[in-house]
Amino acid sequence: MRYRIAAVLIVAGSLWAHHSTSAVFDMGKKVQVTGTLTKVEWINPHISIFMEARGEHGVDTWHFEGSPPAWFRRVGVNKSDIAKAQGQMITVDGVRAKDGSLYGYLQKITFADGSTLETVSGQIPER
Image 1 (tube, rainbow, N blue to C red):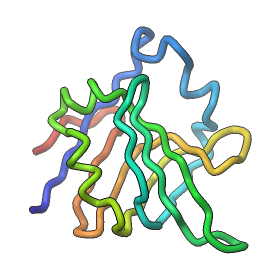
Image 2: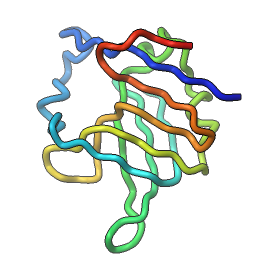
Image 3: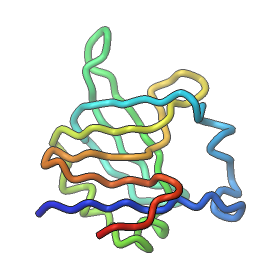
Image 4: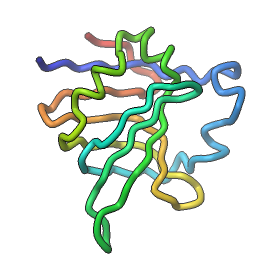
């Protein structure tokens, strides 16, 4: 089944009380990584996805942090919607950590079937 979900990411003070995304991530340092989804963690304060991608010297393991699980549930997405792609190729667009590590903030996932999940400010949810 193909689906496209675009969701509005509202950066409210209470949502990001434990840290600001701009404190950890360089919002101007866009990154796009294509690789195999290896793990999905659906725990507070943010979901995390892990993927393996070809790097300069072999295979790199990337960690992308996303919005809280409650936010995803509010827009109609649950863990199985993402976890079903485990073992498959995905492409993640996001912003990279300021420290240059293989850590980023998730803004969009493109699944192997071409469907996407976006958390991009200013767009109206589409189902």
